[in-house]
Image 1 (cartoon, rainbow over the protein chains, first blue to last red):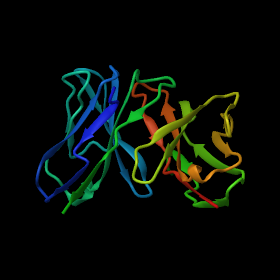
Image 2: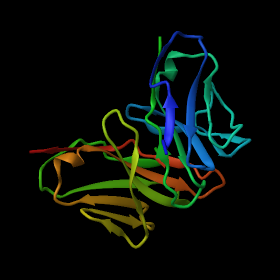
Image 3: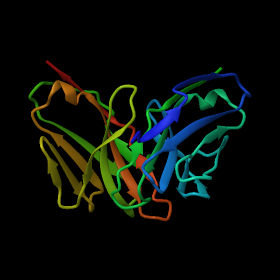
Image 4: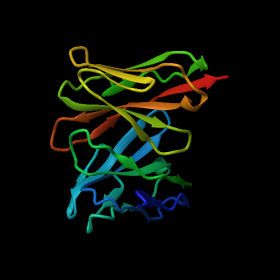
Length: 114
Length: 111
């Protein structure tokens, strides 16, 4: 049981490049989400999914796309990287969307956009 | 105004001290409340959920005051290993079930 895995751990992009951050969980969780963490800002929700085939926007969705074709995978795509997207990105999952279910986080991807 | 506000600290305390963190939230329809712990350059991990009646887990005690929209975390007998950032987290009571994170309070426990 690997929990939530993310790849890559580190990435440097040039402005305008695109890339996909990978996230997978092996706990059969319904709910998956992507956050970014910036100094002094706390974690902010980018996109989330309540199940395969269902995605929705969070607080800061601009410049990012997601899809959820399987229960296990929830990739985050940066369409055209900008320096403002330099951040640490965390993927998280929980068994259900609501209640007091624990959110399990992946180890994070540290992204720098030059 | 942020939806979840915390004192950023840092709180610098000696081993064995008792330290308390406070958190306020602005959305009265918030459903669930949590404290997460985040070590430097690591992912957040759930420390404890916070229940209306208050709850305790070893040296950690969490309290919720819905009328004042206030959450607290008390750590007794601080250990060096308690040094971390503590995140106050609120779940909204709407169809998004979004978690709203405070920016965290940093704790440094010194020998």
